[in-house]
Image (cartoon, rainbow, N blue to C red; front, side, top):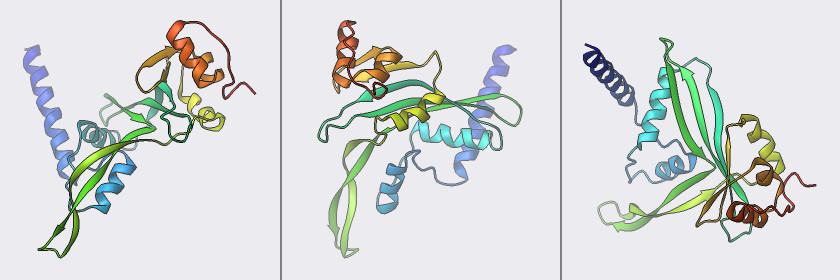
Length: 203
């Protein structure tokens, strides 16, 4: 009997989600990707599972308070401009109209933005985007005291801190993450040996 009820509940949830998705086209949760497809209407966007679950979360929790927590945060220095950035995993929690708990989460501060391949289309008499040629990884939150001050309000004692070298991700302490320079933070994550350098809170 319990198995039958669980199956029925699962089917109802799928039906609810399908009804939500049919109301209007689902766009990417990331503004950079939304802007790309809006600027290239000749391409069709295929929503990801994350896009679909975000739409469902928004509809089911409409009007209810949403609690946002950062469960993991990363430092990265992608190269080129020698700047440091951070990105994080943010968990959302709320309730639906029946009081059931709803959860959703996403990576913020890092996004793979597509770029198009273009061709001249004789029927249109113009050049149009015809396919996705590749993606550029974009980081848009600079690692700075001002940005971290806001982000740290969403962290807790359970939040995990990491440093990403581009090849390897190391777990580090909150103190090292905030107070060491990038290279010292990587060294600590790699060896466990702390050589305190100048970080955003070291001034």
